[in-house]
Image (cartoon, rainbow, N blue to C red; front, side, top):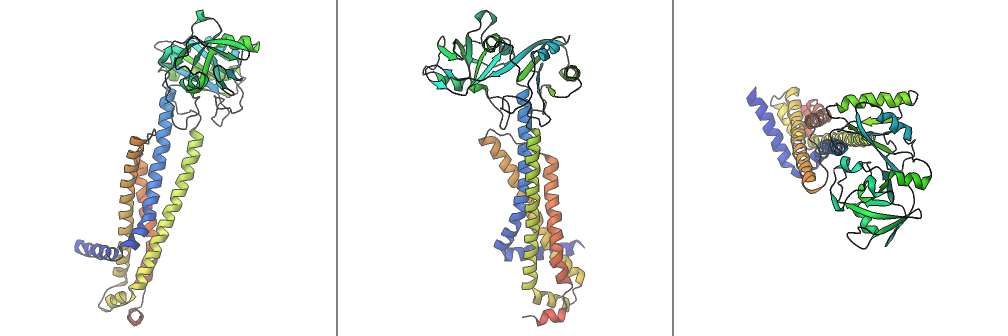
Length: 401
């Protein structure tokens, strides 16, 4: 039995080698399909992990509270119109005995003038405690404190270069909403995860929350709150507790999301899931096209080898043996294409990790499933020409010119 199988495999490989270019083009569909599924799913999972890591960059004891519209965009600093958090929400969270402190982040509109002007800057009003949560080094100066008063500002590195000719504009003035602010510090560059909907703090101007209240005449509503848990408190438990507390204060409406460190509920997961689903669908189409390519290639092969089929049947080959011969060729095409697709996808993931800011993950269930699906597709499509060859009449085949 083993020798017979080796004979089928040898015939299949011999046939594929005889028409290498055609075999390569046929396998290409399988290779592309397998590679697309593995790489795209890996990129999607990698981005989710990067976003989760980013949510944990503020510390293992810091939770993020933000509006949640259900679409996941959550009223962050993306310009998406959602209901914002009220100052009363911050007070509700502060009353929890497990909460160390609550830091608000509110955005304000308005152009900023200094050496140069920025028409639509990202101005964030917050409290001095933010510096202890973001764990970000200062390029120059320091973050403002309560004793600095209201008219101070701290700049992200990008917006600092946009506003001032001086690399280190410490002590210099900028004008926002008709008020003068003194630059107290400049952050070093923040690292943003790809596709993250988090604010780009490199483009942000931070001012005291009290200054925003004076400029607006009332406490500004908040885009986001940082909640620091007390030592020894589980952030997972606290997140559940705060989620219920804030929901109860809103009359039972779940319009606010409380994110624990490392949570993947970062706002882009629905978008990534849609993109992943779309790409997987495209990859399935590629696999079907690859299977159709194998079918066409096998049909051409059967047509070209009609005389050979007739001769083999004339000397005693059964329909089953002819069927196995052509099925083995289809199987060989699929298995080689699937293996090449897996190797190419792993190489692509490695290159993406080395030369881009992406960190695609290797999702092993997908690495296993994709070639199996490709194999099943190719064998299924390869069965049609194999059956045609097996049912061929030997006399008619021998008469074929």
